[in-house]
Each structure stands twice: as structure tokens, then as C-alpha cells.
Image 1 (cartoon, rainbow, N blue to C red):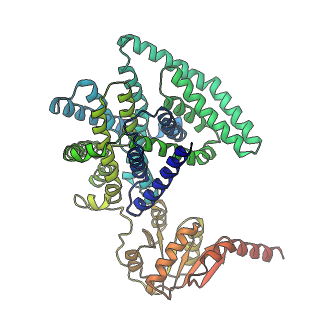
Image 2: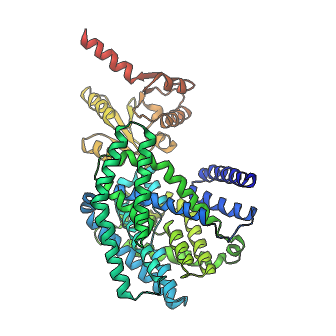
Image 3: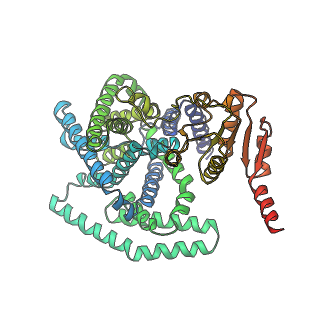
Length: 530
């Protein structure tokens, strides 16, 4: 028992420290979990040992990930995105798979079945890394961000039939016709049950749990639904993920979607961390160093194949700039490849040595992906002029102007009043939608982050009369205020705050004007009432 607790302590401590260090270099936390698994496996000498309980828990990381994807994939959304999601996604997965299969089977001389598995796994990109970057940078609202997101969603959907295919390839007791008939009948039973009786049960359970106003009961109902749907699908011969995904799609049509997604986010991330940790336990570091040249060569070949395929798919109906950035964003190998290789190895379709080699290629891809995706504009600029790059602002020719940071409802009201009073102002926002809206309304608006020195220089902060910050996030406010004051210590910052506690947290900064939102509203209400 003490050994288990000590192992658990070391695992948590190592992963925490590693991820703190990696975060500073812009490397995904996924790599920290994988590296932790490798370190722990060598420390306690269980590298290569089958840890069934750990892998079962880890598999439910993928289950909950697929459930959250299902929550985002209502039938209405699929209908609206059908072209860029279904067509582009299908072309990307199928063409990438075909080319990689031909390369694997005919050039490297790998057998047909392993080549099929390799081609399908390598056709997938990293949803976890790419989507998190697109959301954080607000590039998800740009043309390349929308197209990248659509293809990633299709790839996530494609994981289900890929995992099913592997399960059936491993079943050599049935003929192809029997497999197709059994699969069809089982699928009909699962879908009919979940969309009829299952749907009513889910709605009843969620409503009942919600009415109790006890968070633990509501969370328990979510876990019951996810695990129940997963077990049903697994008992019918499918993957746990299929049941969870369908359950997510059903709940997506209800009013509980947003709350559920928020409530399970932490648990999903924890289980995914366990999954990546279990992957790390299978990595042979000495094998990696011995074969690093082969691993790197194949990795380069894979990203070139995928980038070229994505480029020509997107180029059909988009400009060159969008096609290049989308290709750069999706050229890597994704985290679902780990699940595919793990399942194929357990079913005897891949040798352990080949599986280790493929996992190392995927690991290398995911180590380099954060560097690639965070420099997507810089890389794309070598091929085409960019139009949506944040923080690239041509210096303005203004003095004694007001800078408005943020263009949500408050920012829009301020801009409208300043325009009515003929006072000069500019708008800066890190949300491209807001920037495009502001420009449409005739304002000077720029896409970027006010905590970046080039932006401060371009907006002539040192010549401005004041900077109005309308944001709500305290951490963002502090970062921006610190950057402004470091650039120009006499800056007249007018900061909106939501509480006295927030003011205390920011009192160490030389901010001239705090505007308490609720106090001002209260004063106005009293003034109007008397």
C-alpha cells in the first residue's frame, strides 16, 4: 500500500513540475503526461507490463472526450456545416489514408492490415492541441480556423468507424458478410434504444437530478448516462466511445448541454491525463534514441503528405493564404492514434515493436506541434501575405487619443458615446469577430493583444490621453496593466472592476482610475429613483 501511495505521489509531483516547465516553452501538457509515464515506468520497472486496470481507466478518458464532442455535434450543427465538415473532412481522411497506405505497403513493405491501421491512424490530427490553440488565440473565428475546426470534428467522428474496423479485423471467426450483418443489426439496436427509451431515461434523470439542486447528484447522473451508454455499446460489440458519443449527441438537443460540459471538463482532462500517462509507460526510450533518424524521417514524410492533401482540398474554394494555414494546422499526427495503436496491438494486428515505433512517431509529432501551430502565421508568410495575423499593426498617426481595450457590449457603448462627442479613439481586441464588427461600424479597430510591446508601440500608448480597459478577466487585466505601465509609467489607465476584492488585488499597480461597475450602476439607479 505504501509503495502504491509513493508511486502515486511521484507521478503527480513529476507531472505537475514537468507541465509547469513545458508550459513556459509552449509545449502541450499532453507531452508532460506521456513523459511522466515513461519516467515512472523506468523508475518502478514496469515498462512493457500490461497494467489492465490503468488502461481501462485511461480508456474512459477517450470515452469522456468523445462524449463532449457529441455534446457539440447536434444534428442541426452537422446540417449547417455539412459541406466544410463532411466533404472536406471525408476528402482529407480518405486521401491521406490512401497515400499513406500506398507509401507504407509498397515502399516500406509493411503488410496490408498493419498498413491500413497505420494509414488511418496517421490521417488524424491533434484535436486536443490544435483546438486549444485556436480557441486561445481566437483564430477559431478566422477562415482557416473554421475550416480546421470542421475537419477536426470530422476526424473525431471518423475515430468511431476506425476503432470498429480494428475490432472486426481482429475477429477471424466470422466472414465479411456475417461481420457486416452483425454490425448493422447491433448498430440498429444500440441507436434505436438510445434514441427512444435511452433518450427518455436521460431526460428524466437529468431533470430529476437538476431539480434536487444538489451538484453531486447531477454529476452522478451524468456519469451514469455516459458509462451506461458506453457499456451498452461495448456489450453489443462496439467501442465504449460509440455509446458515449451518441449519448452526447442526444443531450446536445437539450438545455443541459452547457452545464454538463462545464461540470465534466475537469474529470475528462484527468482521465485523458491518465490515458496519456499509460501511453508513456509503453515508450522504450533506448529504442527511440537508437531509431531516432528513422522516426524523424517518417514523421517529416507524414506531415508533408497531410499538408499537401489539406492544401489542395481547401484551395478548391478558398484563397491560398487560408489553404496554407489550414494545411500547417492539420499536418501533425493526433492523440487518437495512441488509442488506435493500443487497440490494434492488444488485438494482435500490430507487433509490439512496430507499435512502439509508431507511438514514438506520434509522440515526436505532438512535441513539435505546439511550436508549429503557434508559428502558423510566420510559416505561412513564407508562401503568402497574411491578412488575419494578430499583433501585426501598422503604427497609427494619432496623439491624445483614447484606446478602448475590448469590444463587448460595454466597449461598444463607450465607442458610440465617444463618436457622438467627436473624441478620437481606437479599439483593440483579441477577438477577431469584434474587430470585424467594429470596422463594419466605421471605427478604427485592430486585432491584437494590448500586453504585447509591438502593439503598445503601434497604438502610440505613450501619446494617448487614456486607456479604457473593459475586460472582465482579472488575470488579463493585470497582464495588460503591467505591460502598459512598464511601457509608459505615466499612462492614464481607466479600469473597470467588478468588486472591491478585485481592486485590492490590483492596488499594487499605478492605476489612476478604478470604475466599480456595480457601484456606478447603483448610483445611477438611485439618481433616477429620487
